[in-house]
Image (tube, rainbow over all chains, first blue to last red; front, side, top):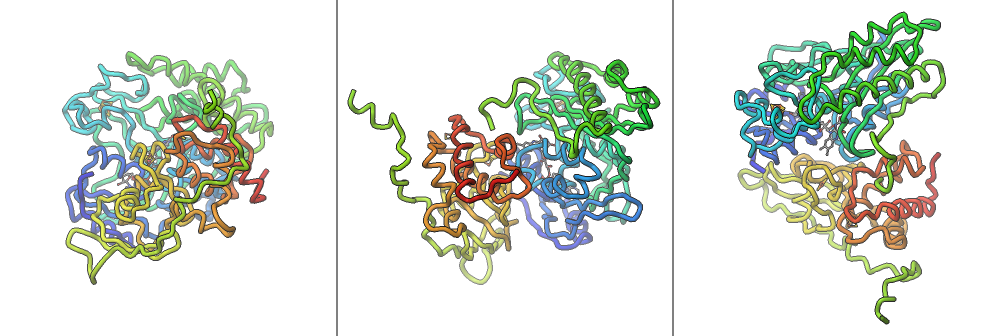
Length: 351
Length: 201
Ligand SMILES: Cc1cc2nc3c(=O)[nH]c(=O)nc-3n(C[C@H](O)[C@H](O)[C@H](O)COP(=O)(O)OP(=O)(O)OC[C@H]3O[C@@H](n4cnc5c(N)ncnc54)[C@H](O)[C@@H]3O)c2cc1C
Ligand code: SF4
Ligand code: FES
Ligand code: FES
């Protein structure tokens, strides 16, 4: 692994100040993305600023019903926190469906937001064409093996999926990312945080140079809503999603009052299916309306050579997540919402 | 063939193997002098219950420091990228992948490796999980075993994870076994749990 200078900091302002001292600096949180990618020589920071000692490990309920999560709260702590389990079971389920126990123990809220794509060409610097790694170099996935790549939000310059489960739940819940940088503090809406690749796939998020994420604030939960996170993948556990769907659904009498549908594994950023949601509001829920919503959600999808299977897979995931969230809203299932696992057969002999 | 009966049936009454993984060393103070050499950082932490210190370059991961500097080779390197769990150790009591942690960042922390697991437990001799893995034949080549045991030990202590097989398998999914010893690993965890009396609904 190439070498770098290392600084551990105790205060937010000194973290930002240190970060500005080198042209290529990286904050170190859990390290599960950063150290992996430095070893692969994909990320090449001259300086690593270790932020693990910053006082950003609290989860607080605010007066207006929002919940503030410190940037350094681990994925494990967040998933198991009583407030999150009670009010945002979707987030809890999404987190627990991701990675492994060990990785979730290290991974942080901010690091998870900032994790990089698992596109195999991006992760392999011996492949010259990757616009995300080397702007202007081309995209090896377009003509290569693209089974795991995105069908929504792609551009001719990049088709990489956003890999996070947590971010799918956050897209459904909504809220804001609080950041602090050389110019002071500001807030970015969660839905505006991740960027589409467009012409600049190397720009993945709304952070300005040297800005540090200090917390994520969740919007208040919907009253008496049901929720479900469904993750479909090549093996039963410890694998990224081929398609995942997070649903929050609140009834108004017999009809759907509010519904949020977010998708993972199929899009270049954590995806909200707004048209599909709109088609369901005020409707008496049922298989047909769910299937219609699923069709709408994938209406603008563009398949590549090897990933056309993701269209029906995502549609089925949406229908099943809607059905299960509806059950949950009707009191058919007790919280916390659990996440289902394998796309194929049950777990067999693997743990 | 007479010899073929040798290993055909495993006898759990057989004495456990001597314990090469018991950590008998106590001197982990590897750094010398008042300050660390240029280009290195001085890191002080608790290793298997003993004070430890080392001078490391920033790009050294905990896994390599444990193996190459402290000669604690019970923690194995499989993938080196967080994908297999062979390098699992406890950092302040939580199971983590030592291959993705900078040695420099454990300053002030408590690290336990497979060599220190037995001593971290109240009873005599091996940790109940180490005994159970042996009794249940929960390995073939053994490469993944120390990582499996470290994950299982953290899991048994974690009140948030229920004791049913599905939950245990899910919680253990970060430890890959290429020999496919999963069935017996699960049995070993059940056995140790029963011995420790920590079954949770
Ligand atoms: C084998 C494996 C399997 C995985 N499986 C899954 C999965 O199934 N689902 C899933 O969702 N994820 C999965 N992950 C990804 C994992 O969730 C992320 O690596 C993790 O969330 C990153 O968090 P971290 O704290 O370790 O980030 P780090 O590695 O410390 O940082 C990641 C990036 O964020 C930046 N950063 C960190 N903190 C801040 C901050 N406060 N402000 C600004 N920038 C910051 C860093 O500079 C770096 O660029 C997997 C990872 C591995 C290695
Ligand atoms: S899909 Fe994006 S990340 Fe993957 S090779 Fe193409 S440009 Fe690079
Ligand atoms: S060696 Fe660390 S997870 Fe494989
Ligand atoms: S016993 Fe061989 S890898 Fe698990």
